[in-house]
Length: 152
Image (tube, rainbow, N blue to C red; front, side, top):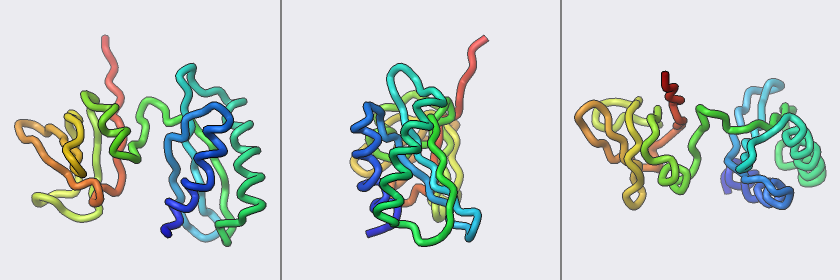
């Protein structure tokens, strides 16, 4: 089982039992500078105190389970306006937003796409870029996030 999936299965129930939405996680392995970033959300927003409370709970679980052998920093955060996108369900819910998507390997001659998120078709994320609609295979997506739009 991949580390990402193992951590998600271990930590999502902790976050959700505290009344928050487990939005996703990122683990960046870089020796002593490794980072585990957990994103939490709530319909009323997220405060610094919420992040601190969740961080304490997650730290306790990680100390007991010890799934990461190297040194790392734990960060708990709101997904923010430029929220990262982790699941097909999130892509579907965020349809209509402008997104940036980076693929692990080139698709149709490119790795980066920025456009309006149309939605999801089976296992593909549909993005409208310029005058083209791309069906990007979910398994090829390395990273994606919403591009905040500000109105005058």
